[in-house]
Amino acid sequence: MKLWGGRFTKATDAAVDDFNSSIRVDKRMYKEDIAGSIAHARMLGARGIISRADCDIIIKTLEEILVDIESGAVCFKTDAEDIHMNIEKILTDRIGDAGKRLHTARSRNDQVALDIRMYLLNAAEHIKDMLVDTETALLKIAGENLETIMPGYTHLQKAQPVTLAHYMMAYACMFERDIDRLCDCAKRMRVMPLGSGALAGTTHPIDRESVAEELGFDSVTLNSIDGVSDRDFVLETEFCIALVMMHLSRFCEELILWNSDEFGYITMDDAFSTGSSIMPQKKNPDVAELIRGKSGRVYGNLMATLTVMKGLPLAYNKDMQEDKEAVFDSVDTLMMCLEVFPKMILTMKINRDRMLSGARGGFTNATDVADYLVKKGVPFRDAHEIVGKIVLYAEWNKKAIDELTLEQLKEQCPAIEEDIYSAISMQACVNGRSNIGGCAPEAVMSSIKRLKEKLRIS
Ligand code: ARG
Image (tube, rainbow, N blue to C red; front, top):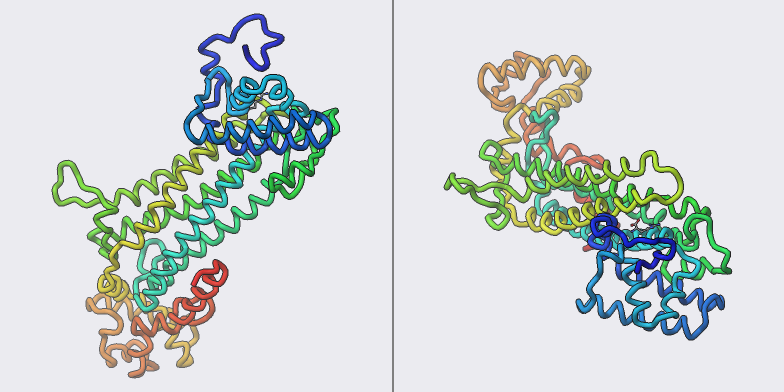
């Protein structure tokens, strides 16, 4: 018999039991469900809505059920539909009438809204810790490569020399914003919906604030209809996760390129590469490719939930049960990626010679030649034009700009002197960009310091 079976004259079709059930997906919220029920029971007891004795036995038994679930002694049932009714059913089987009183002044609609919020708040904490691990790895690589010169790109064309440290810090800044975004999203998630009932609130004299306080929420929802029908926090979490995946994916794309024979800037460690079943020579960056690939599914989860919610009339609709499969998949996928990612980058070999020779090609110091001329009094637009000609000339002669003789350079512009060479070396290009946020070692060092202070790591 179903917990809601009173008005039914027929058993549910077996196929419908299976179809309707979400236990397979939502059983992972058992801890949150039990914590929520304990807080609810305590409040019902304190308010005299249920007796002290009932309250005590409910709480004690829920604690025992938690231990039993964790030890694997509990078998959830598909026909009990979801985690909420499974636990209530186990409770009632164990303590009878007292168990049946737990659901007073509550609906599964506010119960599930509570459970997902609690689950995702916890998951967000976990993700933030993992993002700190990733940032820590980036800060380590950055600290060791303040003077590792490599080309920076625009349009995937060599643009200006930068350092690997600067590059790594670019990603560290993204992940830092990701942490901020998760914190911000958590603020809206720490609003407690229990007490919304099915949609209209409850006639019982409940105390929502005490439940919120016991469960670590900052406040309570202000509208019972919104309390049960809001899934913005699910979407925001999915978006935050999608954005982290986008950052990881861009990074992985670069690593895949850098690991290629054409670039040769890094060599992935054997432990983070895989081979080919036919080509004996192959060593593929599968981990990076998979992270890039998984970002597609995570974006899909966000789109799926947006689409589920689109056009749903207030308040609860069963469609909303579909939210969990998507958001849990996003959480799991991101956690899997963040588990391997820092390990992968910490073990990759950095081929500094290749990076430096990459930076030397492609006239990456052309802007610095223009800046040199500006410092000699040439207006920037004229300098730009002159250097364009120098680049053409160097290209015809198959030389880098700093491989041209002073005579050749002077022919293009008489303002050029011997000091040009020290002004446009790769080191000079990098070291000269010492403003805040620039790529000079001292500037990057101060960014590293600021980020470490923020993350409280040494
Ligand atoms: N398993 C449901 C869900 O995840 C719980 C809420 C069910 N409420 C209802 N009225 N059927 O959305």
